Amino acid sequence: MFDPTPEMLARLSNDPYEVHGMQAGFQLPRGIWRWMFALYAIFFLGIGAATGRDTATIFMLVISALYALIYFGTASVLHAQKGPEHISPLDRIGGTLDTWTGPMDRGTVAAQILAVPAGFAFLGVTFLVIRSTAGF
Image 1: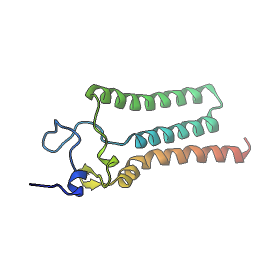
Image 2 (image 1 turned 90 degrees about the vertical axis):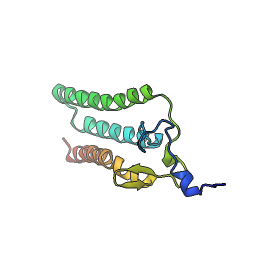
Image 3 (image 1 turned 90 degrees about the horizontal axis):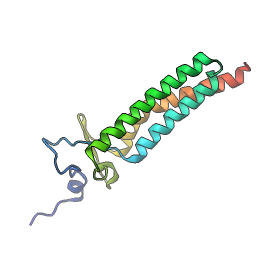
C-alpha cells in the first residue's frame, strides 16, 4: 500500500480536469487579490488627493480607475466562467504553486505579484506627501 508523504500531498493538483500538469484558474489565495486591490486603491486615492485639482486631471484619474476596474472585472468574469475551484495550493501547509521557473511558496508568489501594485501605492503616497509639504 502506498502512503503519500506530506510533501506529495502539498503538491497535489487542484483541478480534477488538468491536462499535462497545467491547471485552469488563477490558483491565488483571496488574500493576494485583496492586497492587490487595496494597493491600487491607495495609489488612486493618493494620486487623486495630490493632483485632482482640475477637470482634466480628474477625468484622467477616472479613466485610469476604469482601466483598473476592467482588469479586476475581467479576472472576476473569467473566474465565474470556470466555476468554483478548490482551495489554492498556497493555502495548504507547505503548499507550492507550480510555475515556469519551478515551485514557489506563498511568500515568493505574493512578493512577485504584489511588487508592482506596492510600487504604485508608494508612488501615490509619495505624491501626496510632496504635495502636502510643498504648500501648493
